[in-house]
Every structure is written in C-alpha cells, then in structure tokens.
Image (cartoon, rainbow, N blue to C red; front, top):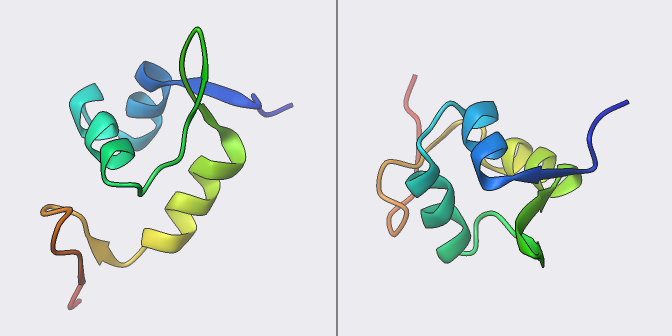
Length: 69
C-alpha cells in the first residue's frame, strides 16, 4: 500500500532533489502540503504535481517553461 503522507525529506528523496527545493515548490504553490506537527505532502498531491509538471523546466519556479525535446 502506498503511503498516504510523505515528510519533506521523503518527498525530496522521491523527487531526487534537495529539501530546500521541496520547500521552494511549497512556497511557490506548486506542491500543496498539510501540517500535522510538521509539513506533510499527501501522496495525491505529489502524484498531481508530477502529472501537472511533467515536460516542464522547473529550474526557475517564477518562469516555468515547456521543455523543448
């Protein structure tokens, strides 16, 4: 069974980025957490983020571009 909630650290490992990038995604409204003691990322939100931003360049979160492959 898939976990329903992930910590910021677990999310960073899943996305293969640093924890600061996860906080940047949250701060920019691209990844929506909830707070239960500490921030948690619902699995459905993580799945939605991956689906919504596949094919995008998220290097600059203020200027998201479509990848030209």
